[in-house]
Image 1: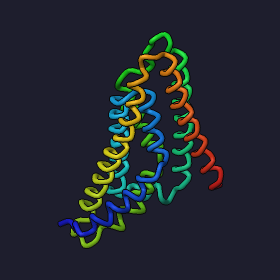
Image 2 (image 1 turned 120 degrees about the horizontal axis):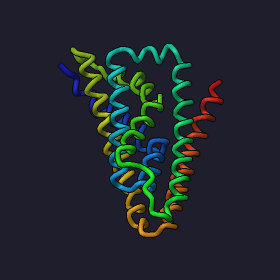
Image 3 (image 1 turned 180 degrees about the vertical axis):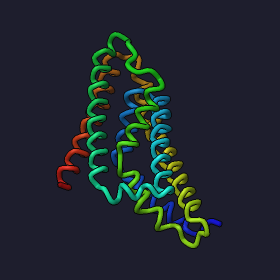
Length: 208
């Protein structure tokens, strides 16, 4: 049996983590500006997939490896920063080709982007390692309790940040008729990716 009495406080903790603007929210804004509403939906589903993978690892107990080997997490963060810089490059290239009406990415790539961004963000697994065990309560089945709590967290982020991405996608929809405006949106999105990559790199350096 599960202990449902912990749900109100658990949801409150999740909202405290999700409400302030952060890297995930900034990323979804960039996706909406660059690709529009449908792209934002696909990207957030990809992020949800990556989060679900990490939640499953923690429930299975293998997440302890990440806790005992912090160098692994640093390596993942470095890969994440490099991937964001690559996204910035691709987006700038898209901006330059916008005037010609060329499509930069196939639809499926948005989902894969979201998966990779989520998997290269070790803060997700750190959140699960630190928070989920605190809300086992009196559950008779701790694995089931943590699995359900992880699913709730994934659902809340998908809904909240998905809405943020869709709202930013309205700007893309309004301005796609103008090649110049489309290029500007892509440059803005590229700038967001660069800022996120720099922030991740600075955090790693400060921790050394």
